[in-house]
Length: 210
Image (cartoon, rainbow, N blue to C red; front, side):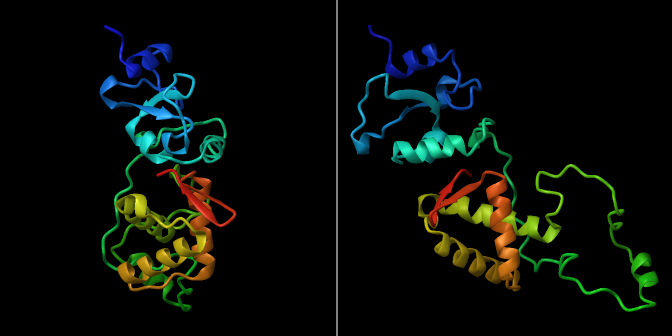
């Protein structure tokens, strides 16, 4: 009996995913056609590789150019989207104003703020190791988590155009937090998502890597 196609690919690849080079269990593996079948790709082994089902679904029937662009966007550090940490959606209560959006307290009020039973304020100059850029505020991180949860829930119905994505984010944040997001903070949010490799915007078209 001949060896199944997927088993042959796994054997040739040493049991590793073709893209991220991490161990790939047989139960989680699937066949990715480099040139999608919908675009005329064949089932020949020169056009097929083994990868996880999550990545297979992400690449879908994209053109070979789009797939190469996704790989190049990882800058040599390809992290499988299946292993990305799941960011929980924040609570539905309105977001607390960030430091950049909160006006300074009047003179004489600083003492009362220090005595309030709230978590200690970050010490200036202290270093932390968040997944986001150090310049991203807590409010902005919550917004990114909210947007990620919504985009993952949408699946294949995610916005594919930059203009549609921005209007979707504006409506989502206004609806879930009762606070509109400014154009400047919306731009920072998209820049941070692109920095993390969660999405790519090219010529107004959006590609996701969630």
